[in-house]
Image 1 (cartoon, rainbow over the protein chains, first blue to last red):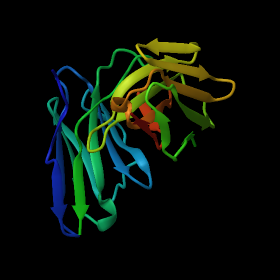
Image 2 (cartoon, chains in turn blue, red):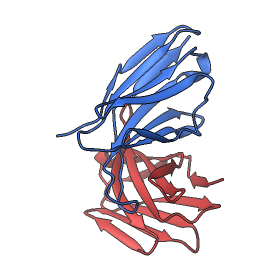
Image 3 (tube, rainbow over the protein chains, first blue to last red):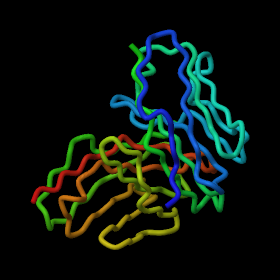
Length: 116
Length: 112
């Protein structure tokens, strides 16, 4: 049963610290998404990769957030420096690029980030 | 920009009844729309996709309709069960690509 995995599942850090979240997409999937979910804003798209190339990161605060895919099995989301307003659940999702009309996304369990 | 509205108030229904959730959108004509289920502490799980040229899609006890004139999708769960209790999110395709914009979700509570 193929699944998207994310580490860590929980992270508590202090303001100003660097935070790195990791995601292993489902093998064979070539689209990867990073989302942030909060009670106030809901689920927001931060970044989108296709075949490891970043296609859209317009939802991501550029000054402190960065997203990369060093290889097909690893996607990272980094926050430096972190701020209390970054506290949220961060989800990674992957999908098979079959057709723009059939794509679905498979979500990981999320990383719950708390910045004190 | 795209705006998606789902009833933010929880929907409480009795077991065995049909639950109907609404998703309204403005400022866009998506090629398709998806519905996801999210349980507390977990990531969303894909349920159904309906394309703009489809009026209705069914999967077991689930039914989705898509009215592009009204800019509305309805999500029905027939013969609801307590296990159906969760938050349901609608998501619209955007920018003619693979990206989705999600609604805020509606929490469904099915009471035995």
